[in-house]
Image (cartoon, rainbow, N blue to C red; front, side, top):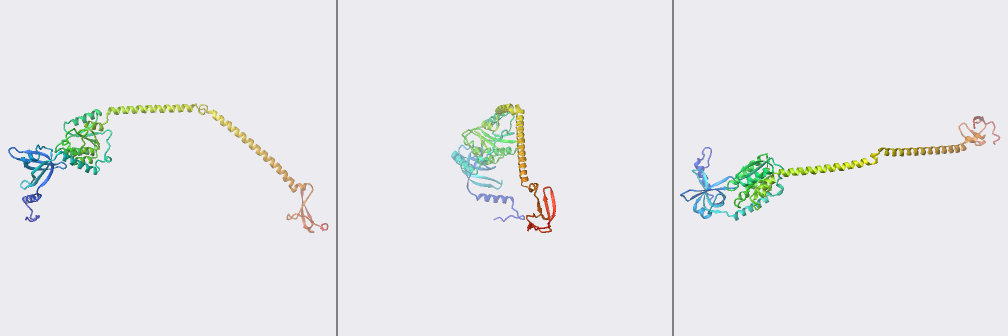
Length: 407
């Protein structure tokens, strides 16, 4: 057993390589699922070399097997096929490489592929990637339209021709990638990320023409679906025909039935917009003319009213009302004054009639003590008292000399 390595006693490279080989050898036989990226058959030998790729990651492994194993388990095997191999991992210390030695290969059938897609569909739906609430609206007029499609494909021609016909000044940034096979998913994801990072790109179209279910498998790949969901830029998909619905259609913000329909959804029609503007302008003109006509009728009606046609009539009416009120007020005040004068005259007469001065005028006098007490009889005075006698026209002073008459 090799002692543990230290800085003073490090392992040589060959020892590290041997230890790695030992650990890998303990793994034993395993079943491996992958996509065939490359097949190499060497002439004159029965050995077949396969390169298996994980569609969801940039990772591949070399598989070594015999021609009989391939012909028995997967006759007609081609690049891009999905296979399951029973293999034993082998590490070659001399070269420092890892490979798989397979004794059985099974090509995954269409039914199994559809079942896997359905399981992935349920998983992505449960995670909310299909939720309409997370889908972003498309811009009315994008500055730059990003397009990911196959090189020299009918989908590219349809999108570009339709977009330029609808809006001649539209700008497009096109990325050509494989749309089927083992290299499709990573290259589409790379193009998607580059377009999403471009601030000028306002919408991305992912387009591919029709094909078989196997040809459209890359567009149901989990890694591609998650990459589309992670984009900040709205994504429009146009994959296959109307009946084809790969999973990326459900994740995308908008699904179009064809590449032409995708271009129509993304780029507005210049002629239609011109007609819409002209129609709106005509409607605005008619509305404004109608508003002006109604307001003119209203002004004419106001001008025909007496208050505006002959405003002096209203002034004259108000002047007559003011004069009438003034005369009425004058008569009322005079009447009140006359009544008050009569009341005052009558009151004065009554006061004079009841006043002691009137009695004095008839020859009577009022005898008072100096302190103002009235003398009502002889008993109220004594000899020698000084008295004050009030007459009608003045007063007299008197002194009581004798009271015998009163006794």
